Image (cartoon, rainbow, N blue to C red):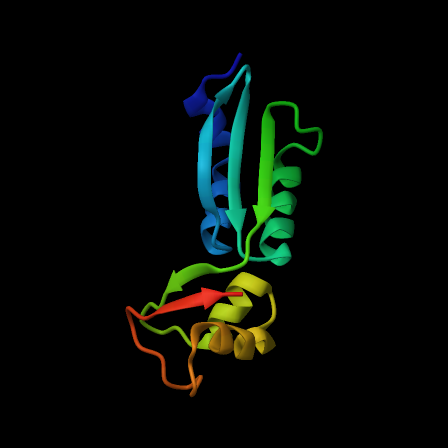
Length: 122
């Protein structure tokens, strides 16, 4: 039986993908002999990316339990180099979703966002 640390290392690519798609991890532990990854993402795109990463490691899910849900209204803090288009591409897989982020965040001019600003992911 693999340890928590061994399974976490095995599924590290999933956790890295989770970071890229805005995964908010709610639970990461050993449940029986399987690694439990439970959390929420802001979009179906993110959920699909996570499942692709899991299946690339073990399509049979022999030693992992994945419970990922989509939850709108999550937030993201703008980083240096971000644009609403880049944020939309990262979280939704499509840069053209930037107007929805602007609207949900009360941003009148999508070209004027600042580092540290918090945007809502609808």
